[in-house]
Image 1 (tube, rainbow, N blue to C red):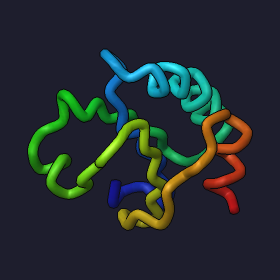
Image 2 (image 1 turned 180 degrees about the vertical axis):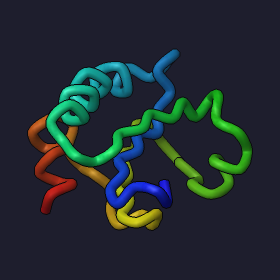
Image 3 (image 1 turned 45 degrees about the vertical axis):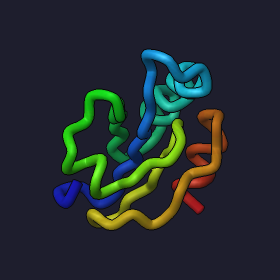
Image 4 (image 1 turned 90 degrees about the vertical axis):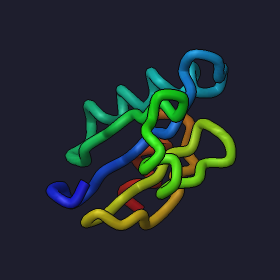
Amino acid sequence: MNNNDSVVVDFSAPAWCQPCKRLAPHFAKAAEKSDAVFVEIDIDKADDAIRNTYPIQSVPVVLFFQKGHPTKTVSGRTAPTILRDITA
């Protein structure tokens, strides 16, 4: 993340989380329209370092990072609102 100015990370559990599955196509569409790097992390497969650094209590959680630091939780659940939240 430190090599990119803007990174959007979706912490999800696509194997069992219905809201995560509904968010996935919107997240992908927002990624196509943004200059930010978009990353999906399956919390069930993530290593301990990620889980300990970002203690996610529920999924999906989308965080926006600037220059390696989390700056906000993205509240949008559609491509337009994700894009709005990361550019605001």
